[in-house]
Figure 1 (spheres, rainbow, N blue to C red):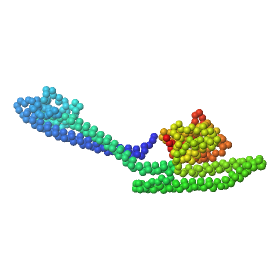
Figure 2: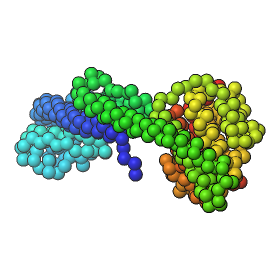
Figure 3: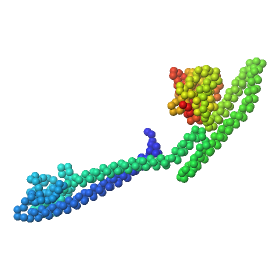
Figure 4: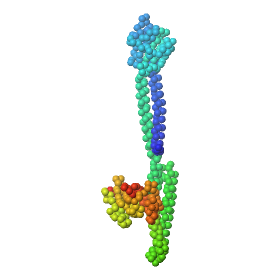
Length: 451
């Protein structure tokens, strides 16, 4: 399970915090508004009920009152419904009287002489029931509809819910904006680290960008400076050692050459020893040359327009192979914006690797991809590279199983390491896969293919 990134977590925290705060405020506001509306409607209904009860009392204070007519004289509108209970008999404006909506407990309370107020539901609708005692035998009831109050409360609830969702969205947007600007210095550090990894060792952070991150910028710059010093020291050491070895190696090579040329004047054992010394000195010279070239891989890339197709043909000719092995890109003029020396070394080493360990390449392809990446592919029909070794063979002084199987080869173990180093210096990479129907395919990707 992948863990959410820092920006996603902060944004989610802002959104959840805003949602909780908005929800709490919405619930409080809804409860306060609903309570206020109900209390206001209740006070108005009680006042209206007492006013109508006074009219009913006056209308019934006659010798032969008509209760229904008295009720019809009330101005109750469409939201209030009057009822009168007189001598255990119910009266309403119409002939149909529904007294079941008046709770028995409330009836007893009103008959005992106490006014009563109760909120109930009738036919699924909320109503307010007000009971007013008029005499020991007469009680007045008024049923007021609360449907309008309920609808208003629902509308307020929906509005507050929408506001809470909008506030949560605003909180998420604010969190995203805040993290974007807060993480900008860290993004600058990541970009600087990538440029340094690509070989631009002059990259530094500006300590004045953010006062709160001055310590981070200063520490980062100090770390890079120390890294550069270590790299320069190691590079100088390798270069100095290699150059210092060249002079005695040249002397040894000259002496070994003399011995090798006079091999016929020596006995068999001495001649064999002279040949062995000459071969090992030649291998030593190649190793020193590779070490010097390896030290130069740390230098920045010098890009220029290069005819990579011509370099590929040169690499084939150098190893005595046919130029027809080169398959140029179907489209494009074959020119790439790359470092000529590095790309020439890549091609030479890949072709040499195929010659040494796979009997020679069967095809050298140049490809220009749509995103501007130039691809060099060298195919062979050798034993291939086992999957566990496909990353290891690009390390320094590592030789694959095919090299060990061919005990007669005299490689230094640095050829493919140089290929990977030159590719990385360009911002690309080197890989190896299987080839159909058999063999290996070495692939180098170099950004800089020109249309």
